[in-house]
Image 1 (cartoon, rainbow, N blue to C red):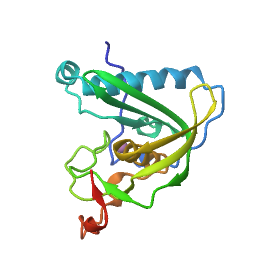
Image 2: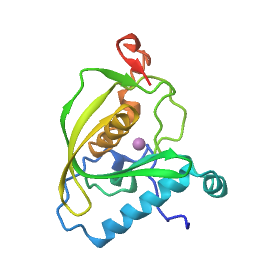
Image 3: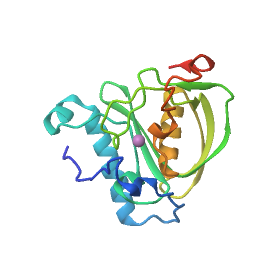
Image 4: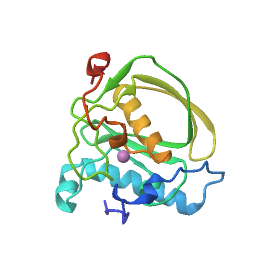
Amino acid sequence: MKLPKINILDEKNKILRTKSQDVTFPLMQEDKNLIKDIIDYLKMSQIKKYYEKYDLRPGMGLAFIQLGIPKNIFVIVEEVDEEVFETYVIINPKILSHSEELIYVGEGEGCLSVNREIDGIVPRFARMKVAYQDIEGNYQEIRVREDISVAFQHEMDHLNGILFVDKIDKNNPFKNKDKMREI
Ligand code: NI
């Protein structure tokens, strides 16, 4: 596998604050290529021999805006077994419904655009139903839960110009901890 040449913007970059726009179909070849590059990059970032070789931070999600492109597209690559991955390519997502129940990631969320340790709670819906378009433009619906629900919300925030650090109360990073379930 060859490491794709992608340039991930850092949190200090104002472009990350852009609200992304819905895309039309068919997708430009350029966007299709970029989706493939992101999938490869995220996989390699989770495979030891590659993240050691290329000094990558492991990441399971990336939104187009993190590469400076304000389009409503994100990719999530989840390792479901040893070097076996489940890939989600989500275009023009909309939340149809969500649970009342909130969860948070106990060890904290991470982001390929945020290169520092952050303590605190990011409240997320435990479950959601999301409508989106796939890479061919077909309308799809998906139910997500637990860590994948968190990942979807994290990436959908990127599409709205929001970083997970924005959602942590600066004065009280563990505010309302008791009202949510840790995952
Ligand atoms: Ni992120």
